Length: 219
Image (cartoon, rainbow, N blue to C red; front, side, top):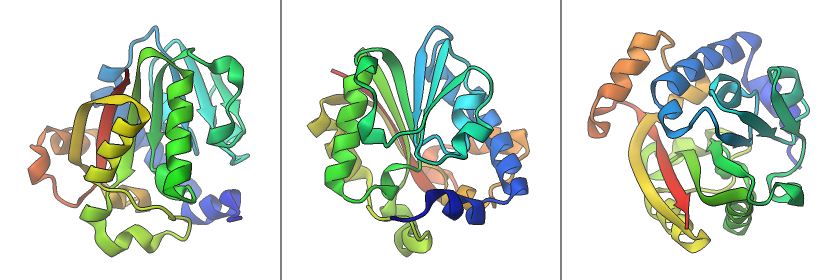
């Protein structure tokens, strides 16, 4: 098994974590918050250093990750569940309004495991609940998809869409060219106005875009 804690310590310096947090603060405020109400219960699957869940405004927050460092970065009010995403507590069934995943599914061992995690997410969502996935798209990034040692499963627009159908979700939004893949390597500029300008561009005109974004509802 790949040592998750060591892998991310090597990948993100302290400066890198701080820079990513500033990016996510803007992304949540400018874009992701419009899908989430202040009264919602939100779960971040594969929460990592909690950049999303710390910055989103909602009623109750869960951060799920096997990395023990997740607890160090979670802000007050975030409940950390240090478990595999396919092993969530049964008492959470039908209790969550939104499940969010960012750069997570590519780390799973197989497409069977990807489907298992998506079905688990469906199980904990309320009827009509929403799943939001930010995901590198191998059609956009090509061989760079494999630049990270812990990337195991490749997904693209077609496979993500079919995954939602198989799992019983209705796709609401799919943006193929959403964010640069280089954001993972801390090359994406952090000034909020740059991020705002980037997201204001038509998706087809976004330079270096390598990540897709999908929003789907539980049927």
